[in-house]
Image (cartoon, rainbow, N blue to C red; front, side, top):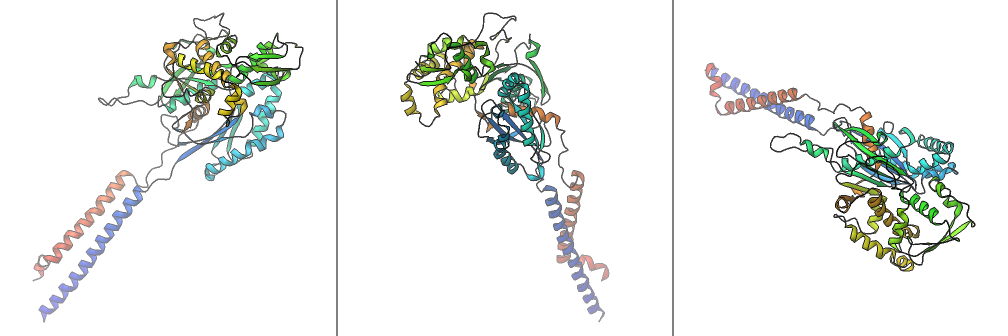
Amino acid sequence: MEDRKESELKNFCSRNILIILGFSSIAAVIALIAVGLTQNKPLPENVKYGIVLDAGSSHTSLYIYKWPAEKENDTGVVHQITECKLKGPGISRYAQKLSEIDIYLTPCMVRATQVVPQSQHQETPVYLGATAGMRLLRIENEQLANTVLIAVARSLSKYHFDFQGARIITGQEEGAYGWITINYLLGKFSQKLNWLNLKPNEGSALETYGALDLGGASTQITFVPQNKKIESPSNALHFRLYGRDYSVYTHSFLCYGKDQALRQKLAKDIQGTNGILRDPCFHPGYETVMNVSDLYSSPCTKKFERTLPFDQFQIQGTGNYQQCRQSILQLFNTSSCPYSHCSFNGVFLPPLHGDFGAFSAYYYVMEFLNFTSEETPSQEEMTDTMEKFCSQPWEELKTYFGDVKEKYLSEYCFSGAYILSLLLSGYHFTADSWKNIHFMGKIQSSNVGWTLGYMLNLTNMIPAEEPLSAPLSHATYIFLMVLFSLILVAGVIVGVCFFYKPSYFWKDMV
């Protein structure tokens, strides 16, 4: 009788112990899975957005940038995610039609509200930078330029972004920010590791590219001089990016963008004619009529303004590249230089050094002329191509390039000749240094221009946030994982032993 009671007690205890061990093991497995999933679940993306509007002389573009809130050496890692081109001319053309600015800006600003998450609209900064077109308007009528900026600011303030202002950036800023953009996209600010000692290779970060920017109304040249000596203080700018200090030379030539340079050339060449200008920079058979008042309406042509016996003049193309270039060279005054080295018009220019990225109109014109291959064509090849292109009859050219707007097509001969003249005679690139020029449109899906550099520099003023961390500290996570693992292992060992060798647990009761 006692043996039977003892056997029932053992069976009862064994069953309950196994149930407890089973539940403990299951609980330990669940705890391990829960802790692991909680600790290793993807963290929410912690990013910032910024919007920059590039208000150029001929058009306006909006760029949306994105960067992680945890910055790298105090400068955000910025990427372009969207570009939106506004339909219409530059904002300076709206000086007499301010009521249309709202309509002009709306499509791209609406696009921005769709791209940037709504939860981040109020903390997303919006900047508008106006360049040479507005610089010229300010020279002509400062009050009118301010009125345009006020109207633009009023329109942009209607959106629920953090509008930071609309202003005219200086030519030096435009050049320097373009320099930042190129070198950022090419990875020139990142230190490379030496595989032998895993220390930064100091020399690699110093070999930056120079920047050549050509717009419609101005052109900029920016680079780090080899000896770092800049004789003209107004041409020196200093930056700190990714833990490094940079001293760069930069100069902006207002009125020497391709559109205003053409106006200067026409205003110079029309003098002494009878109202018919036979122009070698336009194709044979090309004809157009232009108002003298329109030609002299720009501050860039005031120095050529004369009282002429006609109100309109006709341009007749003759298509001669060499004559065209000789006419263009008269725009560059290289007769005097108050410094050790100059570009033109008495402007200081250090000796050229290193590789250069040429973008904006440099790229668009050279792309059309098929000069944007990986290896820059030689001067002789470009000259031969330009001579053949400029001499092509206008009607033949229109047939071959029927999808190109006539205004742009008619000016490619002048633009190509102007670019070669500016680089060779204006900036003094030689046969040896010419091969260091690289024509660039985009790098890693980001447009090459001043706006990305502007955004990069501005992120230095945005405080970095603490990185998002996992729910548990590393020590707590390890402790819990070890604890629940030990509970699971102990439960399994005890359960196996109890199941196969129950006598070890009951021998004291026998």
